[in-house]
Length: 220
Image (cartoon, rainbow, N blue to C red; front, side):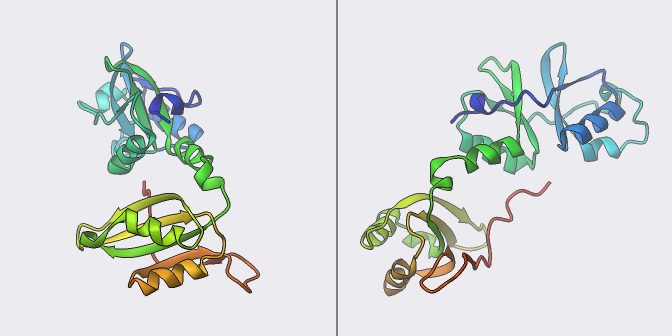
C-alpha cells in the first residue's frame, strides 16, 4: 500500500489567509492536532495546534502568525511504512501527500493509517505474539524463522525496535498459532530471551497479556 491509497477526503487543508481561530476550530472538528496549509494552491507547510496556541491573537491570519512553517510531507508513491516513519519522526497527527512535482493532492491521518494497518491480513489473522530481546550482532531472521517453522508454525509478520542507547533489539513476531508454549521453549533452548508474549496457553481461559515494554508508539 502506498500513500496515494491512504488519502482521506475528510480532512481539508487550510489556506494562508485563514485565521488561527479557524485552524483551531477545524482541528477540534476533525479531531487532529495538525493541518496542511496551502497558498495559491501550493503546499507551504503544516501548522500545529500547540504552535497556534502559543500566539495570543488568534484573529490574525496564518500568514500573520507565522513567517515560516515546517514542511514535512510524503510523496504519493511512498510505501505505507515510509508514511508511518515520517509521521513518527515529526510526531504528526496528519501528514500532507504530494505528487512527484510536489503539488498537494491530499493528506492522511494517523487514525486512517492505523485503521489500514489493522485491516491487513497479518494483523487480523488469528495468532499469538512474542517479543525476543536479541543482541544486534546476533540477529538473524533466517534462524528465527527456522525455529518457528520447526514447531510447525509460520511467521505472519515481524518488526524490530532498536534502542540507540543499547545494542539490543526487540524483535516482535506474529505467529499463526495461539499456543506458543513449544515455540517459546525452543527459543529458550537456543538461549534467546523471550521478553514478552501474547498467547492463549494450554489451560488458560482468556488471552493473557504480558507486555512489559510494548510500543509507546506515537505521542502527540
